[in-house]
Length: 199
Image (cartoon, rainbow, N blue to C red; front, side, top):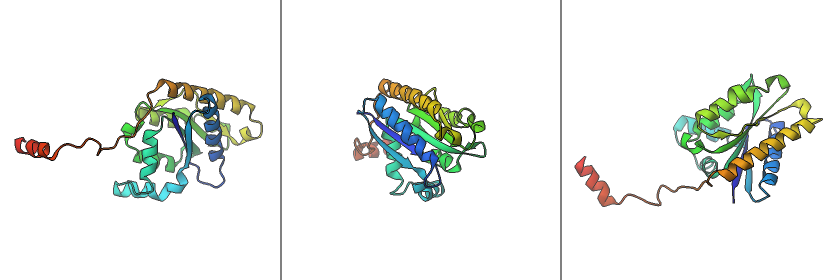
């Protein structure tokens, strides 16, 4: 059963940035035939933990399960508000604490919210390049929702539906992720001693 994780980088409560991943997740689940497990995470709840990870180099007990969930998800929905014509600092900080190998080949649907349609290209010139750097497989359709979209959102619904179909297709085509436990297959102590003696 595929696992879909949606992540919202909205800072306010309530937030239109949270509304978008909810709708994207619902549409994706429908495309997957309701056969997926899913969850939504709000980064604002982990802001201090993300900062601690940046400062210390270690994920604490609150953040570690979040990073593990990113690693085991078969598909991600990432949504950021638009700040100063780019993604939010919280969103970037979260990407900075993720092991880059975690994102390699992972299907990702990108979304963003903003007050005006003029910032819609933030998806293409800011969000998509950083996910490409992490070697994630971003689907072709990214979804931007301006304030005006929430009142008469027929076109927004069409974009959401198209993006969800693309993500579901990519998830079906990708091998399911499995959590890897570094202690499952440890190197025998005798081998470590032998390797140290021959070094």
